[in-house]
Image 1 (cartoon, one colour):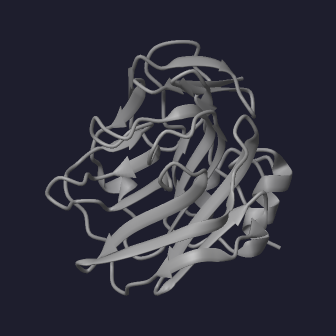
Image 2 (cartoon, helix red, strand yellow):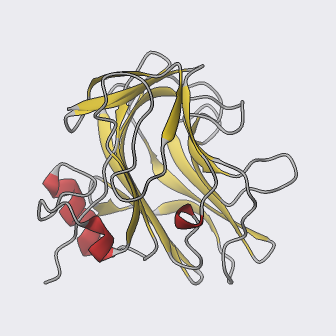
Length: 239
C-alpha cells in the first residue's frame, strides 16, 4: 500500500467534526520519517496559533528532530517533548497520550523520558478549525513521510504502544479492521494513489493539496515535501 508525501508545500485538511475532538483522554499513533530539519515542522495540528485555538498538535521542536506535543485544556497549555532526536531518513513509530494530568510518549514501543513536561487538568479546548496533516493553517509545513495515522479517545497504555509498534502498523494488532472497538475515532491509511484520502472509521475525507503517494512503511503513504506518509489506526489486544 501507499503513504503520503509532504514536500514543504503539500498538506491534507480534515474539516472540523465532533469525531476528531476527544474530550479528556486522547492518543495519537503514527509512523513518521523526517527528511529535513526546517524549523518547527508540523506533523499534524487541530486548531491554529492565530486566535490561540490550538487543541492538539505534534511537531518537530525548533530545528531539531525532537518531537514536541502541544495541547490546550481549560485555557491552560500542555506541552511535552522527547529527549530523543529522530534520525532523518529513518522510519519511527510514535504514540502520544494524555489522560488527566499525565502525558506520555512512546518511540518504537519504548516509553520516552521527556525533556520537558507541562501538564494541565480539564477537557481539551476546541474551536471549529480544521485538522491538518503536514502543516498548521498555512505555516510550519512538513518535509517527510507519514504513515498509519490513528486518533483515539482513550489513553493507550505502554503495552498498547508496544503492540502497535511490533505489529508494524498503527492499528493492526491483532490485525483487525475494527479499531473503533478500542477507542479509535480516526484512521487514515493513505493507501490512495492520487487525490483525496479517506478515513477508514468515519466519513471524514482528507482534502489533498499537492500531496503525492508512494510505498510507505505499511503499504502506501503520503509524501510531504520530498517525502511520503501513510496512516491507519491500531486494533489492540484485549488480554
